[in-house]
Amino acid sequence: MGRKNHPGRSSSRRETRKTKAPRPLPSDGAGFYGTQVTEGPRWTHGEPYLFRLMGAAAATKFYLCPGCNQNIPPGVAHIVAWPKDSGRGAEDRRHWHRHCWDRRH
Ligand SMILES: [Zn+2]
Image (cartoon, rainbow, N blue to C red):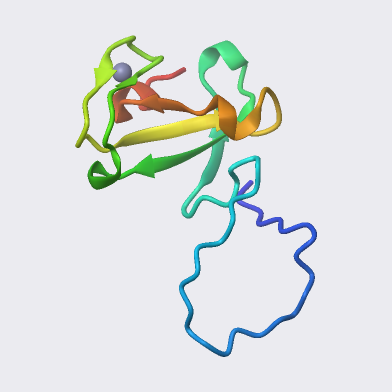
């Protein structure tokens, strides 16, 4: 849990300049800043899930929360979560109200 894996990133290239080039995200989405691992919702029987907080400024669309089947309107900070090891990884991202995510069990 919380272990940082960077397979294939063995180069010891030094960062001599403070460039803020956006890093390409790995296809499983694990490179999202601040992503954590936790237990998935009850229907996954505790399968490991990755999740992160999406800030209000980043929330620009309506999302359907799988916890309550209600919309999450733009401008509302919420949780983005997806299965770590199964399904289509980051393509299976779901957007949850924070209180729904807290009650997903
Ligand atoms: Zn909800």
